[in-house]
Amino acid sequence: MLMSKAVLIDTTKCIGCRACQVACKSWNDLKGERTVFSETWSNPRFLSSNEYNRIIFREIDRPDGQVSWHFISRRCMHCNDPACASVCPVGALEKMKEGPVVYDDGKCIGCRYCMMACPFQIPKFEWGSAVPLIRKCTFCAERQALGLAPSCVTTCPTGTLLFGERPQLLKEAYRRIGSEPKKYYPQVYGEKTAGGTSTLYLTAVSLEDLGLTRVGFRTDLGDVPQGIYGRAWMSKVPFVAVAVGGLCVGLHYLHKRRAEIKAEERKEG
Image 1 (cartoon, rainbow, N blue to C red):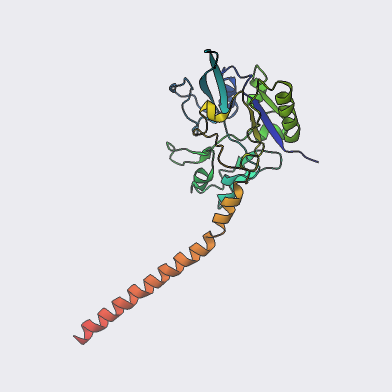
Image 2: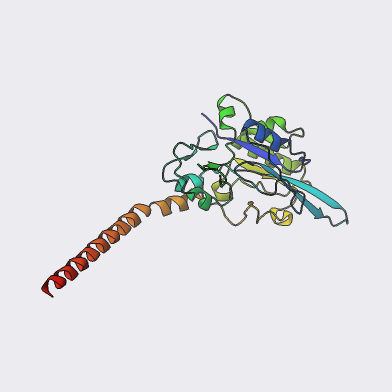
């Protein structure tokens, strides 16, 4: 039986070298551009249609008075039941059984519903393009189809990124937590978040302590799959469309009738 693939990101191993950023841009043929540092030395400052992955730098004051650095890769979560795919009216976004959430630009109509629906703020619009499309991490779906790991995984020099079957990665994550409880925060982010994701995180401290909950790492989503909300909303669209269409037709005939009455009054006058 085919198992869904995932990537386990052990942030305690990350050294902030950004090799994964470079590999991502190289494989996806994303153009180089001038970027600037954020206040915390993250670079680039934001994800964009030309930046699918970025390393966030965080500096934490420890109880012993020392300072510890933490580096966290921000990328598409590849949700098990993605909100972006659930609201796309033309099926341009699809969750593959292998794990990736992929995008077909040949179907996209540019409505940007996916941008509004994604709780992690991942899909990005090509604002500077004459024919803009949505762009985001594809989890290297084309590499996976060839039996290869994502480019970021193969490039990481410290083993921060571990690629494999999702159930096995969760077992490995909890094995690490159990063997070194002082090293890890006792939670795997993405295991149940928003119904579960194919991008899983291990951290040394909580996401709240890292100040990440407002930059895409939400902890208020619970375990409910986000696609449920999208499908509930989209199921009402046909009724809304019919109602709006009926209203427009009614207004048209009302305006037409008023014009006819005025024309008759002028003839009588």
